[in-house]
Image 1 (tube, rainbow, N blue to C red):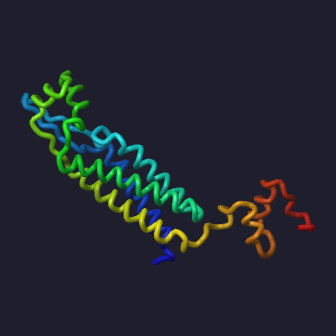
Image 2: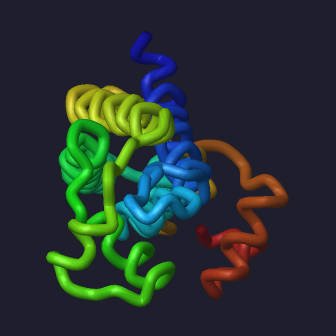
Length: 197
C-alpha cells in the first residue's frame, strides 16, 4: 500500500478538486418564493463563495504533490486539510439548513428587494439539491487524503532525477551521463564533456 501512497493521495486531491469545480456550476439551492413566481436556482459558486477558488487550489496542490519533496508534502497536506475543513463547514451549513444569506444576492437580483425583512417575506423555503451532499463526500475524501499524506509522506519514494536540484543530482549520480543529464548540465552552465569532473 505504501508503494502506491503518492498515487492514492494525488488521486484523492484531484478527485475532490474536480468534483468541487464541477459542482460549483451546478444548482445547489432552490429558493421557493411566496409570490408564486418560478423558483430561483442558485449555483454552488454563488451559494458558497469559496467553493471555486478552494477547489482550484486543491487541484493545484494535487498536481504539485506528485513531484513535491518531503517538506512540501507536509505543507501541502496541511493546506489541503485546512481547506477541507473550511469546505466541510460551509457545505454542511448549506446542506442542513441553508441560511437566507446564501440566497440573498440571487433573490435581490430577481426581485429588486433588499433588506432581511423583505427577503424573509418573499422566500418561502430554501431547499438544497443533491450537489452539496456530493461535494461534502468529496471534502471527506480530501480530508482523508490529507491525513494520509501527513501520515505517509516520509515513506514515499523520491521523484525522478529531473525533479531534483542540481546539487542533489550531483550527489546521487553514479555512472555515465545520458543525453538528458547532458542537457541538464548545459542548462546549469556546466560542460558535460569536461573530463575533469
